[in-house]
Amino acid sequence: MTTRSKKTSRDDLESIAEMLDKHTDMMDSNRKFTESSLQELVKEIRELRKSQEFLEKQYEDMKNRLKQTDGEMVRLRSENKKLQKTVQELRKTTSENQEAINSLEQYGRRECLEINGLAWSQHENADELVVATAKKLNVNIKKDDISVSHRLNKCNKDNPQPTIIARFCSRRVGDLIFNNRSKLRDHTEKIFIKVEQTSLQ
Image 1: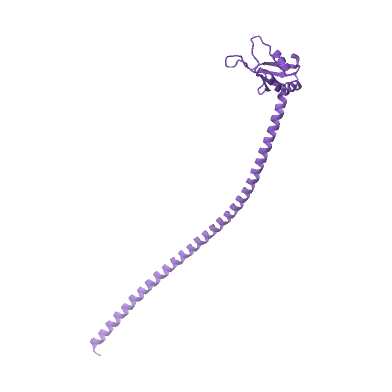
Image 2 (image 1 turned 60 degrees about the vertical axis):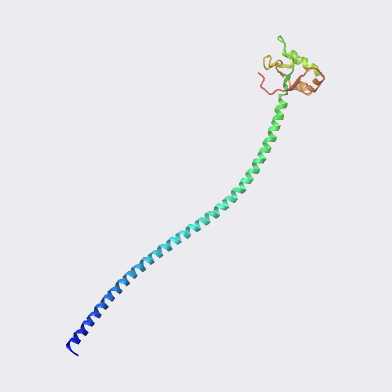
């Protein structure tokens, strides 16, 4: 082999070695990059797992809360039905009690009556008008049976026959007059008697 051929072979070998070094450096660089990328990927996967576990826990918590809420709603609906039933019963009882109270008040106020339709005169005596009205009902009373009586309003063109209100000394007298009021139908005068609804002064 000539000297020139030996030199060429040596140059080729050096060139190949240099290329191998470059490839080796490149492979090392790629390996490092790959390892770094894999580490980042592993880190991301771990973070994703943590997020997934957190979300799963949140989901389970939400499911448990919904179950509790559903149970509470069922309980509240049941209590609401019971309360509605109780309210209805109380309303019914209140209505019945109010009717009873009204009846008792109506009965208790019979010692105080309103007499409508009696003609007004300037010098009239309300007690005498009440006694005369009772006589038309075949109920004999005296002025002493009347505690107080008077017209509720003054006479005027809009109210020519103001109501007379009379309070009796006993409910027995008021009951006699009230229970016989239907006999007024036999008279030409349009006189009406009812239980007093206002406060007698």
